Length: 216
Length: 62
Image (cartoon, rainbow over the protein chains, first blue to last red):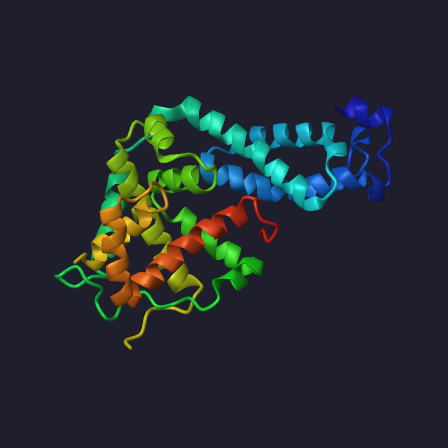
């Protein structure tokens, strides 16, 4: 290692950020600009940093090869996410049934209890926790902080609940396939998706859309 | 008449499978009278749009 340094003096700091092979073309810069987002996306679903890095690295390499096919930034981004998504799906399919369930059941039961607490005994909304409109939620999609809250809400879901939700909504898999991959019954899958949506809804209500419900 | 809790389950399942005619009817009837469940529906529908935006199907990403 020291030899290398001795043979080739370090270039001035300004040009040292990338090795010569990766001379920053506008495309390469554009692609690496998406890297943090892609990594976050893969990590959220895999809970495995090494696998997430691999998925993103492969996607970026594929993108650099095929860059000429992309006219716009938005098309490129969609495509990058599509590749990462496929890598994530492959990985999850391979890992499939090894999902560890034991410690998660408790968290899931806690979530169900919190959800039940929103209702009166007759299973209608209790006046204090009845969902109230979020105004214009589309505006939130434009805001950086909203996405931070969104990610936190995903992260606090029990692992299996989050995984099923992300397989359905991020990876766009059909419920049948999710059930098969994770060895769950269809009704179990439905219960988990409902739990995830209800939990995310509650978390976003409290974390972003104006706090607890107020009586009307 | 559906309870609100049951309604939330059907609203969630409606995002994953086609509901039967009977389920759709019961749901529609409940939603006419229940603004809590109407808000719930809008909000879980929004979760799907947000997920799409998050994964780059939509340019308004994070």
